Image (cartoon, rainbow, N blue to C red; front, top):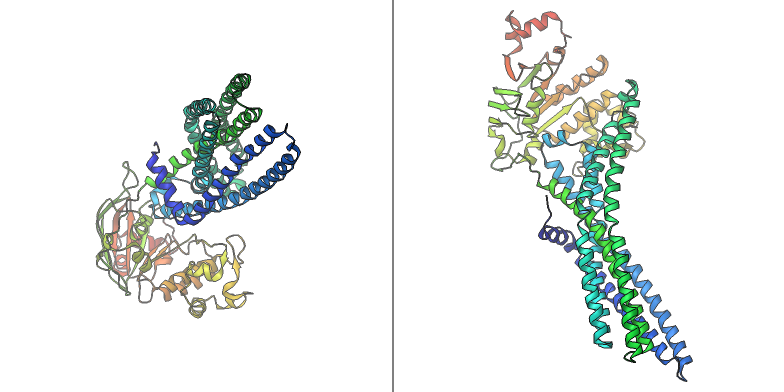
Length: 581
């Protein structure tokens, strides 16, 4: 994907416009610094020309003081310029990180299944960090350096038109040469960023599976793959870096020609008494001044190569669209919600189908026990109900409304899920329960904790709801973590609750506490319980057994149990703790 000028412009203006005042002040500082750089050589030129006169010593004193003063002012300007530039950069890149993060969160589950968390971190943080200089200094500094070059040429034209024209020709050729080399390394930086994303993706996946790696003695394999990824990253970045360095020898060669031009032209003009010694010094001094902006432009172009690679990857990420569209035609009620699947088909790829023309109806306020082997489509049903995935064909209704007509925010406010893997965050107990919603009152949260059986645990917290916990150090048992997940659902008060293997990893004692909380949770709500063990679904209103994406049995538990040939009855006879493997 090639990034056009309009895309650069759009990206720049989108994140710089809110900081217009800072950018204007930064531009003023830049112009002030340029003016000082152009004035300083004039002071020295006048001193050299007047050195042989009787007032030379006085001119030296005044010139020295003035030159030192201007140098100090210029340094102060550069300090403020750097500070404001970095402030603009980080404000812009943080805003871009927020946009990218929100975009990734809106993408459906299939995207996240194909991209690791490490890769996303590298894209959202690594690629965006490469744009910091692009936002803060690229446009401003390139503009400033170009203005400085034009200022030097303009002053020299005033001093001597032939000198000015020679400098102008030299500058145009130098910029043309450097610009031709500029895009040489960009494709290699794109490859390097991809290698970096792959490396961080590998690292992120392995660090989240430390226990499995250690217990299964896979450490040597992980270290070998780590070395392979690091070697690949080194090779790719080295290729990009070496090609980017091609700008440096080009710059050195260009200025070798420039100094030779000054020496030849200056010697000729001095010999013919067309310029003074001070003007000759001015030519060398301004050539040296030209070196700085041209080298800065070279550096900026090198950074621009990296930014171009990052922008390409960011544009690729932003171009990825979710299959889920909101129509916002319906609103769910606060009551228990009915569920209906009408010939719903779904597949993760073209080669296999997970759900095959699935049709069933669950009345509002009823509880459905969903059984089936691994891969039968149970979890897929929950993803469709939350619109984390979109059905391939057929219709899905919640509360009597087509799910495609319900706003996503409204849907996920009224449909809640509790899984066996409850995620805690490094935050307060309150934030972990409310999911960072400040609208819930402390009194309501405490009441909920007491209602689900966590009252004693709450009373032991040193700072109450504002006690800090983390995923690794929370002092909670598996059952308490599961009950915290129930507390999240209680506070939302949804009309449809889904439990996906919510008690499969709990011991019998803890499971009784969770079962008690479940009974309260189901009161006045529609519920779907996905379970392996029959014991988990003993008191549901209806049973549905899936196999290979098809319904093999559906009905009331008592009716299925009376049918001696039913799958449910066979499982009951085999024992209530039978696991459907």
